[in-house]
Image 1 (cartoon, helix red, strand yellow):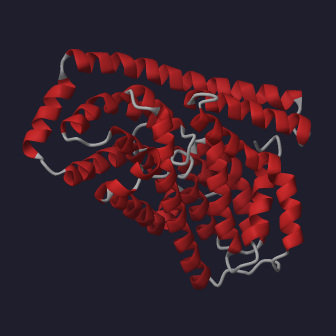
Image 2 (cartoon, rainbow, N blue to C red; image 1 turned 120 degrees about the horizontal axis):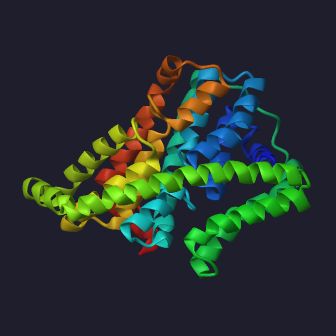
Length: 355
């Protein structure tokens, strides 16, 4: 999407809408990350693809480096929450849950998270006295909208296609890729055949890694099931814990810990077969649980010591892990609050859209 010019046009359009207010680029960062997430479905893609452009734009307008890098890192978490989410697809296949319902269930938590990011932007806008951009110009908005219209259609096509049954949730990823390649090569004309080959090779390496993890985890899952470990663990926990809120808080601690030492898809493939049994025993909605797990594992990508997004941000911005961690502490608080809201008040989140 960077190579094809999609990313730049999305960012410029968002800038035309909010760049004129104090700290406007921070709101632009959140909005552009939200839209980009509806195409990429990945926190790493958000940070590596859109993040560099966002940080450069804020640096050029004298935003503090610690603020800009932390905001971009936090906003990248939206990738696996806003549909179409890669983690939700892996969870849906592993747990045998409707991926379409997973996607719909992720919309409201994603919006909630984005709004909480905007509250932080407002606070830091006042604290740092962030600069005000150019005066709002409706002509510029119209001009940037026309430039970005093909990019903005991508998430709409994906969601409408899934909801109307034109294609399945798993096929939506391929549709998104084909659409972005077409507009990058033939509409914006910024992607060459050489660029396309490089993108395909990079994607093949990533896909191969995920498939290897999935194959290994499948063998482990079979062994666990054969030994009836999920059923034994479920019986043990449900006999001692009766509160679903307490159980969700336990899940929160487990997934946040695992996220510091393992990759997200591997965590889902190895733990979900066990935890789904517990959820069923305690009448915890599996769609809600999948959305919750996706959020927790999204957060895991930005937490030390092995967060993939953390490494991208540190490498691209010459930050040590220590500096990164200190800068991120208030933003980690935001993520924890969002998790607690979803854990304690599950009834008003996914059910609104998928029921």
